[in-house]
Length: 254
Length: 292
Image (cartoon, rainbow over all chains, first blue to last red):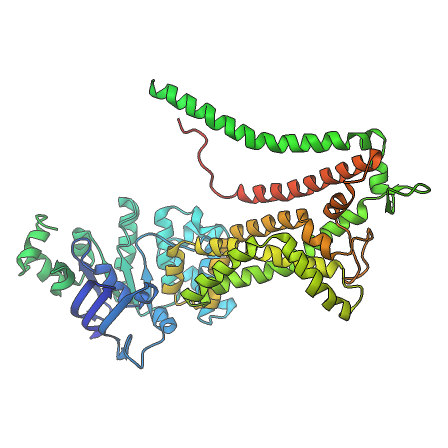
């Protein structure tokens, strides 16, 4: 069952074609990893899935993306506020608001109409999901900037979870973290399998191997990012068909 | 020339220029202090704060109460900040988040021009347009309200432009985080951007206050120049700056040194404002001390 259906998606920044003609189905409740060398449009592709591309001046998206049966770009399009409540995102660099840990939950939850009295319970559940509750429960009014990088990233995951989204997009969530913090974050993403549909962009092939149910490989062809191979993780990662993918997976290319 | 020697020369040169700019302030304070000394020697300090009136020229009953003028300065400044700060911050929010890019650019140019208009022109406009209008509402026209309105127009661009810079300095990562959480524009501005920009906005307001309290020409032209504690917005006032400008030309002896003392007082108040600003800044990150 596909949660997201992407057909013939192209993304341009002015004259630069970042992504060309991608067609892909993201299965519900599974982890889909997007891999490929730098600059092949992985992040741009991911940002189209919650229309964060709207924030980039001069960015044009064509083709279609459907969440269940609702169009993201073509009329009658889902409005961005409710789209982004349903499709959460965690970025490469942890980006908590430089305010108290509590405010980091209150701001988005209040925006989506959660009554004030329900927020503490939701916050506790989300922080427990990323094993951060025990570490921060005594200092919820401290600035989130005082947490370590790994803690901040887990806070950002918890903040995304608190809105109870259907899909969570991860844009290289571990690449700014040290190996231990990175493994902790990876473990929590692993634990979210089944509850959420997950799309993760990663440079780390070992991570893709450990996490992903299915894999999509992006590649730069004719100056633009394209999807060149996709399928179940085991197939793509152990028996790739495309020669570029073969050498990439062997560490010879890209 | 060895590298470290060159470095020492540069260090000495830089130190000298820093000393010059910092020393100028000390010289000004010293100059004011010297001028004010007779007032302190005469034991007139008690008169400064104790006398009820300012009539230094009176032969029969000379009085040197500066309080009404200090209160005048603070009222004019406070009221102008009260008017200009909300307007400046709101226009900065409009420019940064609501207006089309072209309008924002044009508006920004206008603000920069407004900041460049000489104060005497503001005073001229106030005297010929604003004062008669207030006079029709409630005579005599030349008043605390007129001074505060003219002054608020003069400091509005400072507040708006520093606020725009502060709002635009909020990291894109924060805006992305908010957008990805489905946070709409009003809450983005109120709960994410303003808390992050507040230090810069506050610094702009303090800077404007420091400029406002020292403004002389435009205020003098519209404030009525009667040394009294105003009972209403429509009463004339006489700030410290106006008094110094009006009387320094003919004052002598005790009167003159009292004007110096009033000037010193003004520098102290402004200094306190700047110190308040520096105190706020302390929370922000600073360059590490050792760069060896």
